[in-house]
Image (cartoon, rainbow, N blue to C red; front, side):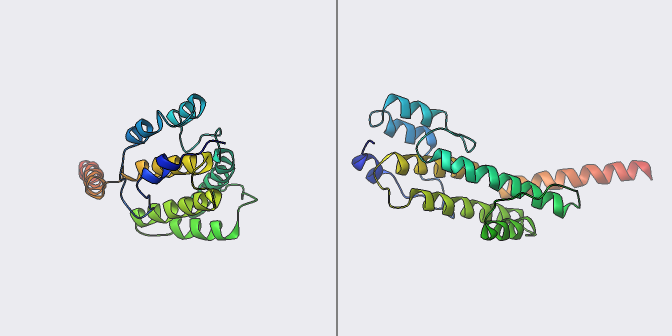
Length: 174
């Protein structure tokens, strides 16, 4: 297993409640000369749904169960029938349930992001300068990349646009 003392120590800290300090492209540029060709290719193609790479197979198992539970909880809230997933930790179930039932969608997303960061931290464990730490960092960066897509003003503008459209349709019917 490779050691990445300089690379890992030069990367900025990532926090679920923080901003994205570097882009994924910048991260890849740091990795270019430090990781093997095979690992670099895995990093280039990494997504939250990936299944290959150090730590990633364990992440994939968690993420699959996470998505199943999230879908179940959302269906349950919408009063749709759905099979109840098995094998999900009770604390994960509670956290997902709290997020799904949160009235504020941004708070809900932040709760889910924090849960995913916590899982990655537990998978990384004591690894600091190896493939586990590198792939864990990359996955956290991918999660933060998604978070940057949340724009409260844009969301409010879109909501307002949709409400106005509905009001216009109602006015045409009356």
